[in-house]
Image (cartoon, rainbow, N blue to C red; front, side, top):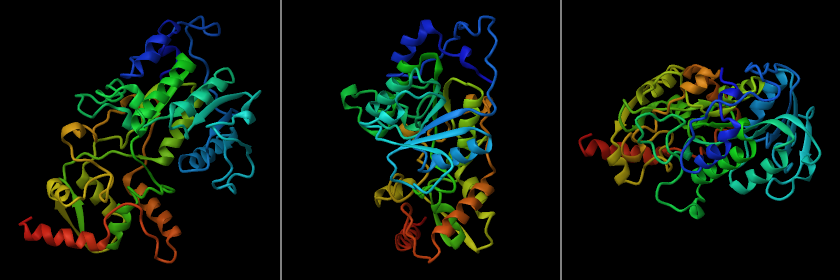
Length: 379
């Protein structure tokens, strides 16, 4: 288990924070602090922590709250009070706006802060400036999208981040903005910096439907179009595994930067769809359709076909992110069959009338047309 003393030392804080702008720093061993002069790690806090969650009622937050409460921690939620306000009547709720009004947080202290809702350096900078002396830890949810591209031989936390040929004044897209937000955390918290970079997050409650499409479509049966090659690498993390990892990191007073990518062993696209196939008895078959064929017809990832990218060009190792550091720090993974079945059960609960339209994925009409054209092309 990596502890604070194993990461950025006070002498390296400025350099580490600056490095976050262009590439993930290799965190140096910290000098013992006043409470750690013998070099002993600080004891873990297993129960009774006070945790402030910035957000807490969207997708990740509710899973974190449930797990933290089950572990005996005290939770405070800070958000605009507009989403899922019925959740968690037993916890303290503070209302404000992280873009402009943090008044409700002033004069308070928490053992740890979990920031799931920060997307821009402005947002994160405001909360970091206010809370740097009001908490021992600040866990920031970043993203796999911070990486410059996915061509490094080893895609670990030290792979380059941020756009390669774009001035920082133009770093406004999701991934680049998260790079600048990470830098704000490093500048404010130094050796206490704790950043997690998830891939696609899946599981019950995921309204993006990027993963949900597959259990739903496979359960429906028939001929299922699958993009790419059966050997394409696929990575994701279940929201419950991520949430449990977050609480574990806070309990262990861990610092550092972690790729929270699952599953624990390499997974191919074929293993993904056949693993999901195992949870249903519906008759079906898979037809694999070439990436270029689909691209020529406007069907590519981030559009109608969700979840993984063709492993070539800038996405060569997109599905091969190294999460060994997080696994060593306590990240564990549910089996694919459990994730798929739980996600499908959750999806059915919101589709009681059979009319819910998935936000992502091929419509049946488009899928049938593509399959017919693929056969005509000799596929």
